[in-house]
Length: 177
Length: 154
Image 1 (spheres, chains in turn brown, orange):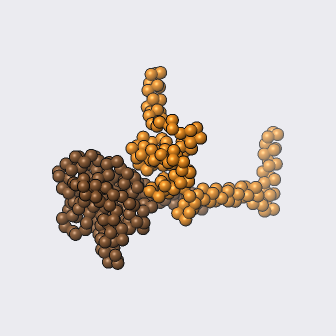
Image 2: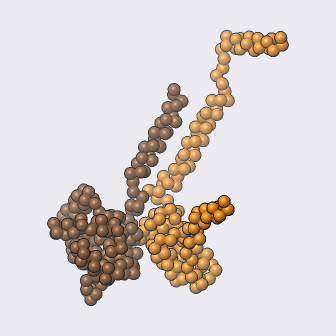
Image 3: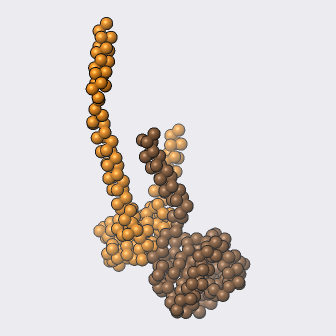
């Protein structure tokens, strides 16, 4: 009896290990930007080619920076949540329109609503590259000093918002600017 | 049948056939090798089990372009890798550096090997030295052997 115990134990251990592996999301690569200043960029905005939006604009407030594109299906899924958030809270949401066409981006915002105070237009994807974007949508939480504190790859869910993002914003707002 | 086989191989190897080739004319032979080595050692983050060299994804294309540009500019391998790690994290490397989070990744297999060797050694020792028989058991065994000899002889 005893000699079956060890293989059984090893088997159960393996099952538990693999089971944990199944619940993890391999797409969630830890971002090297957490705790670092927002990467620099200066881009025109989607709605006004003469207006510049840059990483300096994050400073002085706790804000969300959402990478989106009209060709991105998962962004469409996430969008209503952002629109709702922009209406029901005072959290500033900025956008990075990633590798999109200006006309498509404008049409998309007109059709689905615009939750963004400003969207930087990153047509070539240069800023996105410097931000390590690889799976749109991506959302960054940036503190008052312009430091990236949290990153979510893929669409934000209600659960992410309630359990992680909103509490973090509360906490970050309490910090000295 | 032959046609089916051809079709099968075409389907299986289509990714290989489709692997994009950039214009590498501006690289000398040494730089071209460096470029190829680099992109086969860096991971595409969209299709995580492919290297930049193998992947067709748009991000991989962007990243290859960036590597290409930097090779042309004469940056060292380390500088190029550091540049990408700063954006995508250690995950972008197929050979991650040894640090606290990758310790198990690097040394886990050796740990398992040592464990296996330990178990193997313990088990084989057991077989080498069977438990000694008591005098009575020994006598009984002798009797049985003798009996079977007699049976065979008859």
